[in-house]
Image (cartoon, rainbow, N blue to C red; front, side, top):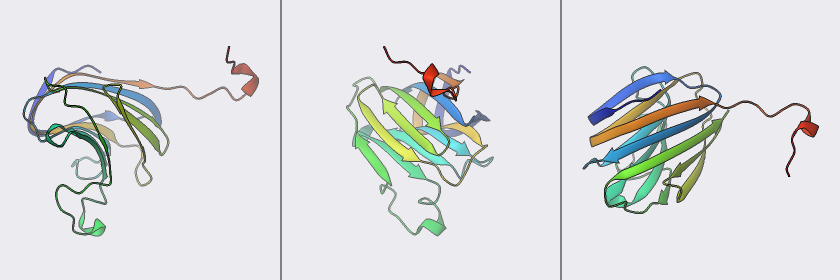
Length: 158
């Protein structure tokens, strides 16, 4: 999957997520407050697991659907479940690399910041892109990762 898509305060629902995958997103944030992906998004893109950059706050953020719903309680708009600092790139370019296997996920931004997370409530849903403000998604790719061999003798480290 490759996309040259300019998003300005929109969400774009894409293909279904496999159980184990590697997702690469190259984006150029041009004034957006938030831009990133939703993993296991429902059809309305209200539920899922949000991974996004906030350039003004210089952080990578993870939020689940529960935190953003009434069931999760009232929160301030800037409250998040997890975050890690990222550098200001100067030109708004961010590369997100996301690895998922079952309920486990890790996201890397610009090969400098990493954040691990869990996804318990949803599966067999779709990947989504979103931006609150102008962002150009320059490329998006998703690869299915194969399981490790059952015979551990086949795994060699040299």
